[in-house]
Image 1 (cartoon, rainbow, N blue to C red):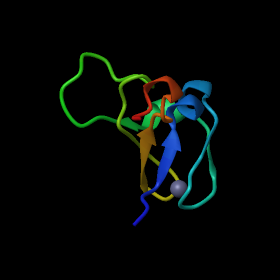
Image 2: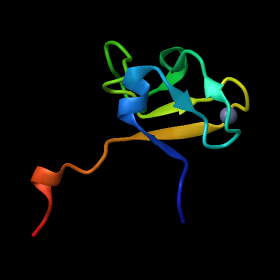
Image 3: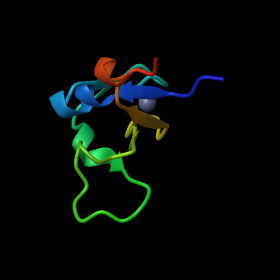
Length: 71
Ligand SMILES: [Zn+2]
């Protein structure tokens, strides 16, 4: 089962297309979600993004780090 996800780099860049409704999210940092307590919610620590158009929640994932691959 796959889940809706976008890479964090897109959130940092402010260019995010909702995988659910395919619409561009104009200001993704205004729609960040985090599970847990944080002092400030940023693109660096957000866990998910709620699409303002379809209200679907998309998870923010970090791409695998090639230097940390299991052998
Ligand atoms: Zn959407």
